[in-house]
Structure formats: C-alpha cells, structure tokens
Length: 126
Picture 1: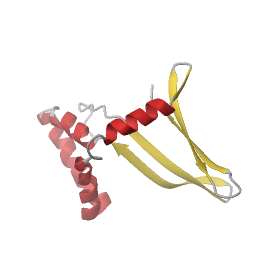
Picture 2: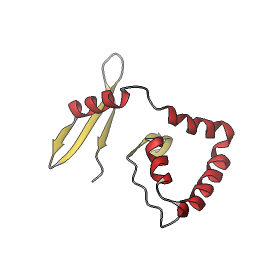
Picture 3: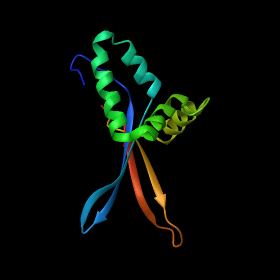
Picture 4: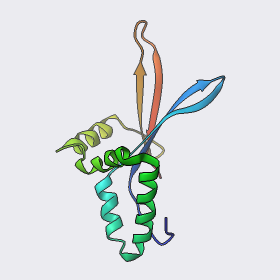
C-alpha cells in the first residue's frame, strides 16, 4: 500500500491455535473490522489512494476468488440495526480494568464434567 495512505480502522483478529506434535500451529484466522468506515477513510484520501486501491482489489480477487470477494463485500450490509451497540454494551459490562488497560476474558466450558477448555483475552490496543 502507498506509504502516503494512512488509515486507522479498529479491527479484531482471532487466531485459533492447535497443538500439533507439541508445537502450536494456527488452525484458523479471522479478522473483523468496519468495512464502511474503512472505505469511507479510503475515499477521503483523495486521488493518491487510487493506486493502492487498484493493487488491493487485484490482490483480493487473486487471493479470495470471486466468491471470497463477494463475501468480503457483504461486509457493507453490517450486523443490522443496533447490533454494534449491543456488542459494545456487553463488552463494557464484561470488561475489567487493571493498570489503566481494559480487557475482556471469555471462557469456553466443556461438557460433563465441567471443564474450562479455553480462555480468550481481548485487550484494547494502546
């Protein structure tokens, strides 16, 4: 991407790790961000952003194919009315603050006998 194009879009990355022969490997990766906000920032960047947009568009189609590109563009639909507010209120209620850093811990509980299978920590970038 062009070094003159700077965009700030809050995003969340999710890595699912699995143990393979006593070595952690990435089993799945998901990325979440607000696509309309990203495109809005891009459009406000002016004409010098066009080469970066063409380069990114070509890479998107090459890496994801036509179906993946359509899936990416479905991000313009968003989550629906009020969904962002519901998630924000949940995270605000679940967050703990320590040394000025807010974090949310999410645990996955297994079946009988009840076991804690996984703990995820989400922390604000700072």
